[in-house]
Image 1 (cartoon, rainbow, N blue to C red):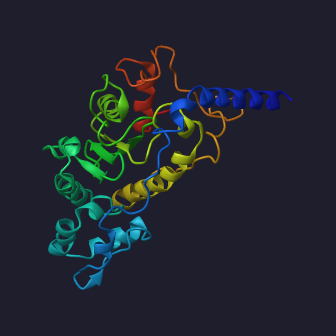
Image 2: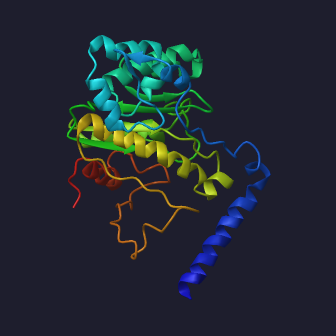
Image 3: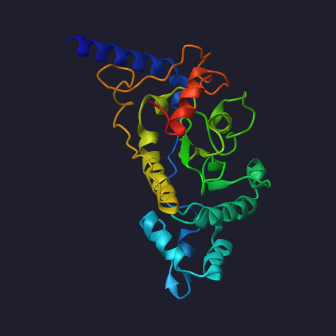
Length: 289
């Protein structure tokens, strides 16, 4: 009975949130999830390398992609980068250096000023998709040689254009990743990304798991791609159905709580000196007890 009452209270809160924002939630805040292979996939399918058909970008596993590219010589690998940068830049299982190069070309080819900073020297863009509001994943550190890899994913209001711009320090995917990378040290690489269509504001999209479910498929392929090119352990990814799943802070859930007593506000978890940042750094380095 107590659990049923708690469920009713949660449902009532969700209705209140949605009702309170219904004036704008039914408009621009209802986002269309961008999924599937990036633009250029049709031309990729019609092409070949060293006389062999290129891997199907929508269905080939990251391990199949890695094996295919490993069997090519240098010219065979670089040809598709020049001809199909958007596909190679998002091709899970492709070598990291090829993806960085492909995404520099893809960003430049997009011709959009709002993405231009992603092609700046030194940026390590592991994924880029200009469709919709744009998606991007960037690496801090040496992904190929790092002993540990952490992935920072956003919540609401994040996309490729706003990913690293106009944010308070240590907030947003880019700021959180920089803070985590500095705290974890050089043996840890951090991937910061907006690899799916995120909700805008606190509306209908934020009240359900619809966009997260669509992004879960891409995230699973992305982490499998990291596994394929590093032969390292990457945790499995799972998303709940409706809503946001079980309460991870409940005793029944069984999770260990990240200390956050010194955190100020929802975006303060990665501020230097906080216990929460120290905990995240320990997790990233495999030192959490």
